[in-house]
Length: 169
Image (cartoon, rainbow, N blue to C red):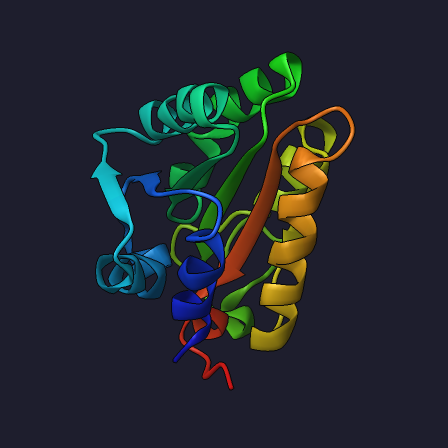
């Protein structure tokens, strides 16, 4: 089992459907989602995936949106803001380039890289970039609780490709 498998195994206790736009930055997450048994709806644009997750959460109590890195992730910022304004508990999960390719502070070193957690921090209850397998699932559990506790709202978990594929034991 890798981190991506563990992510969907954990989330399967809270949702039965994930809305996404597949992309290279989330390749391990997309592959694991296909094996997970969760229903997934592939959308044509990340904004649509985000709004679908918001609508799902308004109906079912919690929603999940998966995007790729860079502009793919930033396309989901508007529905994240909508979830923030309307107090809707949604977890946005984005893939990102490998940790050793990240050049935060520079314009870009990796392909389609962005510091999405810094972008969404003001419009989420919590935004976190994963740095290793075990910590990813610990952070995911904390974010699920945070999104749903008190005044509900969105959270964002960014998972670099090397962490997505890291063995989870």
